[in-house]
Every structure is written in structure tokens, then in C-alpha cells.
Length: 136
Length: 136
DNA sequence: ATTAAGCTCATACTAAAGTACCAAAATGAC
DNA sequence: GTCATTTTGGTACTTTAGTATGAGCTTAAT
Image (cartoon, rainbow over all chains, first blue to last red; front, top):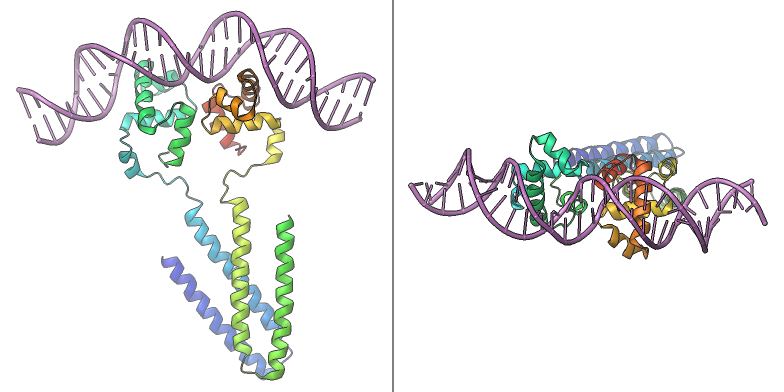
């Protein structure tokens, strides 16, 4: 929000400066009109680029917006989320168990509950859905 | 590549048109110079935005910058890449086979070869590594 | 205190996934 | 045409993954 206002302010200021420049050029001579136009074109060209880059750096560069509200929305518990991250890291149930100091049976239970909540049949599908829902 | 050339061509044409417009305006009267400048500013402003959007749709809006050089670097064949995408979509071997009109055996072969090339033990690990390497 | 929910673990089973070989047909480069 | 690679498919086997069910334990809320 603040950046948008700032960019527009800079845009207006730039426009005014260029207007004044064009008047000075007009007073001193007509030959430089085309040069001024070229400068204006370049300046606004880069303004457009920069403004667009900012809007993209907010939307695209943070696709991993881990939404803690959605986690509770899906009813995922703390442990289930940890297991989910283990799955997404490419770990086996046994490895996840060793990492969390739990038995493989417990991991299987968590995984099964996870699948019900995410409506997945496989762990690969769970990964895909969790990324879609921005849970991970 | 083609798009870049096209955009630059449009850019040059726009510049020439604006030059001509400025000359006509100068002949008829000086009052419209500022208006022309404003038009130029707006036009190049949007050109800048559009050009940047295109460059971003290739770089940022697809953080999975599918690097075909790296694909060959890893020695992944066409089929293996298709299977890899199937895995990442959460499909089972059987489902991938149905999608590509291949037997499950063939998919298993591709998957095994894939694991060797990606140095993965599980399909979940293959997903994680492939995303790391920006193969998908 | 009772209930509800979460966490833990186990057994027994089925279903996928993955490995290890092998082999034939297709493709593309030289 | 020959060679290397890819693609396809198979069998047989081992290993994970996943389901179903039950059960003891903990914790927070009513």
C-alpha cells in the first residue's frame, strides 16, 4: 500500500519535471524536442518496469505463505503437521519416526489420519494437496 | 526469443510514431506538446509494464524455471520426465501408466531409472530433489 | 469427574512401491 | 547399415506404505 502511493507520487513528480524540462527546451530551441521525448519514453519505460517488479515481488516471490489459519481449518494437529513435513522432505515412515522419536506405527497412524483430512490416497498426493492449500 | 524481438519491434515503431506526432503538433501549435508528452509517458509506462510481465512469467511466476539444460545434465529422457511429473502430481504407477498408455511395468522401469539419476530412494524424495534441481 | 480429543503403540492384513534381471522393438546418430 | 540409447514390457521378489481395529495414556474443557 505505502509503496504504491510512493510510486505514484514519484510518477507525478517525474511528469511535472518533464513538463518543465520540455518548456525550457522549447524556449531555448526546438531541436531538442525529440531528445526530450526519448528521455521521457525511457524514464517511464523503466518506471513501468520497476512498478511491475514491486507488484510481483509481493505476489510471486512469496508463494509459500504458510497460512496457520488454514492449518486449523483442515483440523491438522501439531504432530500431523510435523509428519506432513517429514513426508514432504522425502522421508520414509521409519525415518520420520526416528526423527520424532516415535515408533513407525505411530507415524502410520498419523499418516492415515492425515490422508483423511487432506482427502489423499498417497503420500505424494498429500504433498501436492498440502502445497496447493499452502499448508507447507 | 520471438516474443522479445516482437516487443522490441513494437517499441521502436511506437517511438517513430510518436516522433512524427510531435512534429505535426509542433507545426500546428505549441499548446499540445505537453499532451503529447503525457501520451508518450503513458504509452511507454504500459510498454514497460507489459514487457516486465512477460519477463516475469518466464522467470518468477514459474519459480520452477524448467531448465532444459539441467534436464539433459541429469540425463533424464523425455519419458522419464513425463513419469516424474506424474509422480509429482500424486499419481500411482498404475495411474501414470493409464495416463501415458503404458503398462505399470514400464512405469516401474522408468521410476527405477529415475531414482538412479536423481539419487533418490523414494518417490517423495524424487519430488523433493527434482524441485530442488528445478527439473519440475 | 466425565468427556472429548490428541498422542502413542501394536497386530494383522492388503496394496502399492521398489529392485533385479532379462529382452525385444524403436529411434536417432554416425 | 550399425551402434547406442530409449522405450517398452515381463517375471519374481523384497520392502514400504497404507488400512482396520483396538487400546492405554494425557490433556483441556465442561
